[in-house]
Length: 268
Ligand code: NDP
Image 1 (cartoon, rainbow, N blue to C red):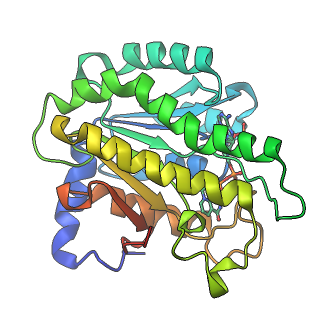
Image 2: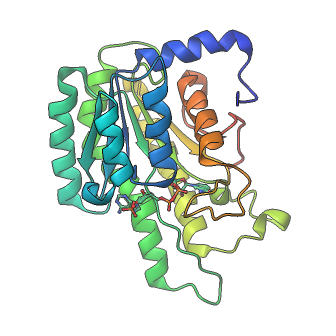
Image 3: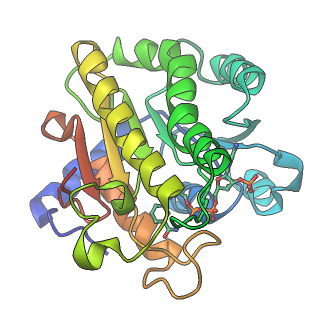
């Protein structure tokens, strides 16, 4: 599937950007969309040299382990995004994998869904969702900044060929769209945590712009994963092939933005 905003003349740039990205790191790659990103990337002709797939418990991530046995350049690193010691040791391990080339693309994908309407929402549910979905991506980004900066210092322009932080958000984080038909999915904890992630993205975009590190919030669509459920319209394959094409084509025009998997702008 080719994203709507991508025209035929952009395809060579798209491929080129993927080919020029020497390393990508994905959080929450044990299953769902994170795992599908790894599966898609390893099969691409033009692919990042190093694909760092992180999981909080690599030993039980069997599909991921199988991929590392079948494809070169895939590194599985333990990372629990809500644990500071785990983030710290993952960052050290990544330093030894990427070396002086640094890290080109960090994809903050790991998240939890705490489904809570007005009746069932608790302070604990709010804090749990906020910790995993908004605080953790910020903590992970801070810890990996030295690697992103190392990569940013070796190139020009903006995009995954240089350095980028991609925060996997959700359309459910849009405050403007939480009205009328868009307000049917009730979840105080999940929705507010993704709105907070959007603001984290904008704050990072402001702070990292001068260093050439692109920051973006991306909605993957409603997808059939454990989180999305069986009634979702998109397969993980459809969502991720489109999402990765959008990621490949990012330029300075997209910095600080909030896009969906087809590359369309979403209202904050
Ligand atoms: P899943 O629930 O299927 O998978 C979630 C992934 O996140 C798992 O790999 C899980 O690991 C990991 N994870 C959760 N907490 C942690 C943690 N503390 N440390 C490390 N990893 C963790 O979700 P999806 O794949 O569907 O969602 C991926 C992203 O896309 C999320 O950010 C989600 O909010 C977003 N999204 C998804 C939509 C959908 O329809 N599916 C719609 C809109 C947005 P483990 O196996 O160890 O539990």
